[in-house]
Length: 89
Image: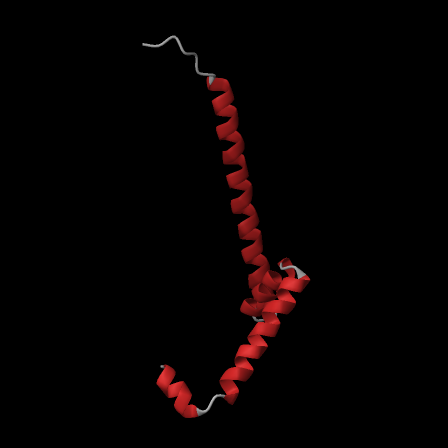
C-alpha cells in the first residue's frame, strides 16, 4: 500500500456540490416543461416558442446572416427549372 493520503472530505464536497446542481437542473427543467405546457394550453405553438428562444440566443449579426442565406436558398429553389431539380435528386 502507498502512503498517499486522499482528501475524502474534499472529494465528498465536490461530489455533493455537483449532485446539488444536478438536482437544481432537474427542478428547473420541470419548471420549463410546466411553462411550455401552460403556453400550449393557451393555444401557443410550443415549437415556435422554442424557435424564438433559440433565435434570441443568437447574435443579431449571426441571425441576420442565417436568415439571409435561408431566404437566398429558398428563392434559388423556387426559381430553378423543374428538370434541374429532378436531375439533382
